[in-house]
Image 1 (cartoon, rainbow, N blue to C red):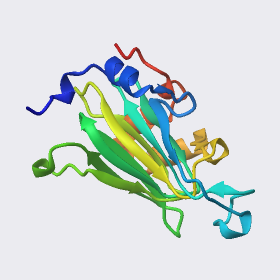
Image 2: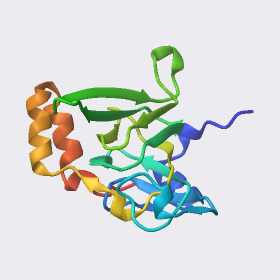
Image 3: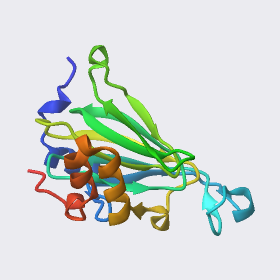
Image 4: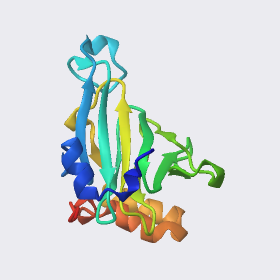
Length: 190
């Protein structure tokens, strides 16, 4: 008999997987893998300093009270859906003319409804994610190569948020939610 993981509460998933609040971004996480080999600075893409493990991966959990705050990274980030309810991943990528393009990917369990089980947030793009309306929680994995370091995380400043709202007025509510500092808060996972 297959267990119904969606019957677990977010608090139970957090406890079982030993997740902790990801205070600067939102949600809950635990690093699950860091590659044992590191690349020297000369072997890394531009923008990196020092040596860096070749790859890292985390469990990442979102609840209705949390979101992945709009931010950018110098590395592509691979998002993989595991369990729970659908998540909307919003990626805003600047074109050569400094105009933004928007891509929303719904990560979730319902392939016939068009859900994806993995998506990439390209390096340098502004991106964030939230649980879809009515969802209780979602468990994902986020993987980066080279490995993530805290200094890689750049939150979207107010000027970028204003430009995004100007470019996509229909997404003002989503951009506002994902762009707020309090949008990264940790909710009650009960």
